[in-house]
Length: 166
Figure 1 (cartoon, helix red, strand yellow):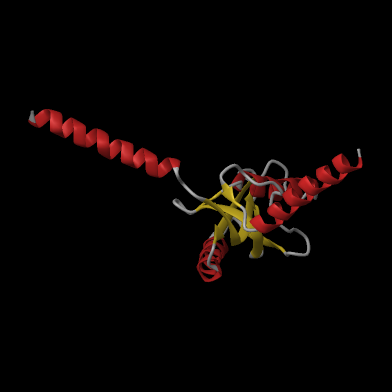
Figure 2: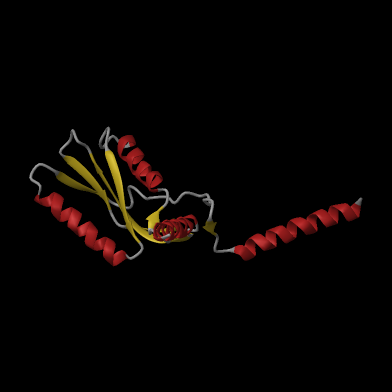
């Protein structure tokens, strides 16, 4: 009997945890981001300035930035296309609070400035700018539902007008 209650309690906890994960909320928000590009075969590394991205998607349960790969691919494509560094590895750092990201940015810069074999070069915002993806991921909460309602109403009214003409 005691073992059955333990198993039942464990099952209930597991189902509760799975339910919490399944109902994670995705939200469009403003984040601050910078990129870093380095190569294992080169003594040069590049860093972007801190940029504000107004339409990023965050999983609110985990504070996980969706489409991180898209942002790092943008930086990699730029660096390789500009012939700055072939075969580079790129990473993006982000936070919803600019002050926290500035601390991380300064720590990374300090670390590489102390490294004697790595030269860190800046990529100013005028040269490279992150672009937010232009689609809405499934489960994302859109901030402008009234615009969707107006478009749906206009569509319905347009159909009524064309049926009345016939």
